[in-house]
Amino acid sequence: MKTLLSIIIVSYNTEKITKQCLDSIYSSFADTHNLPFEIIVIDNNSQDGSVPMLQQQFTLHKELILVKNKENVGFGKANNQAVRLAKGEYILLLNSDIIVLENAIENLFTFYREHEEKFQFLGPTLRNKDLSLQPSAGSFYSPFVVFGALFLKGDYWGLTRSSPRAIRRVDWVSGACILTKKKYYQDLNGMDEGIFMYMEEVDLLYRARQKNLITGFYPNAEFIHLGSASSGGKTYPILQVYKGFKYFYRKHYSSLDIFLLKIMLQLKALISLLIGFLTNNRYLKETYGKAYQMAVMD
Image 1 (cartoon, rainbow, N blue to C red):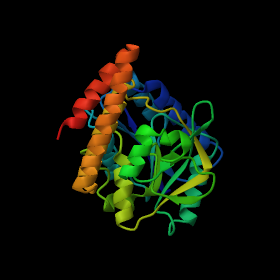
Image 2 (image 1 turned 180 degrees about the horizontal axis):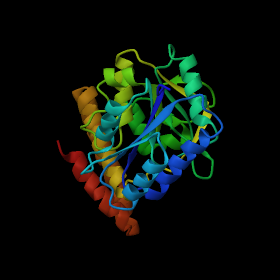
Image 3 (image 1 turned 90 degrees about the vertical axis):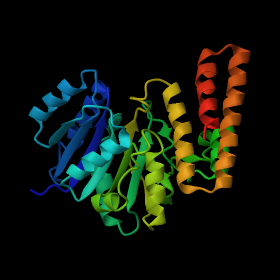
Image 4 (image 1 turned 60 degrees about the vertical axis):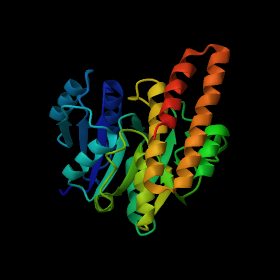
């Protein structure tokens, strides 16, 4: 039977949760054979037990394709690598720290095929480990949105990202789970490989919108997203977000917007540094000292 869906997972030092992700995928398809699928796992030179585990999975499951990179090439490049190998007409980009709930993949896929003239990229509801809703869709990062995210706890209030309760058009959805056609992904030349981690999906879906490809949110398929599983602590993702914002703005925004972004990033870092010194918080001092240096660099 011809492969219809290619599920793509990038693995990096996440042995246990990658195994959990794979198990949840197989479990979600246990009672149905209506969707011919394959799973392509790109391992970015993991140094834990990921590779032996994946090799064992490869021997157990005929749907699994394993590619072992000799270095960590980053999230975007690894996804692009997998898409080139994909046999399916449709691709599901899935983080290794995702747990598929019930028949969520089939629900998402069925809705997509029925509405692909309306939505060319589609994201589902993501939940935290405790099953609370995880904000996973948002507006493109204009200076106003960045200000809300940095200084107004915009994610908490749903100003900058949210988890919609109804089917709707959105600017972007979380890269933890995105369904699209291989053709659309390749027409955009995939993810920008200049972004090592964080902001890849926002950039991809921003370029999609420029080509009149619409992103939708479908709340009736649910996945658990554990979050930041391969980021190596809290400092690294913050620095990558700073780096991602700067890269995204240089690519898509005006000189004035870039100037405003740098001012906001510097101010956020300085405020956090001040709090760090006042409370003798080593994490804040180290993280935002590095973030400030990154913000002032051209």
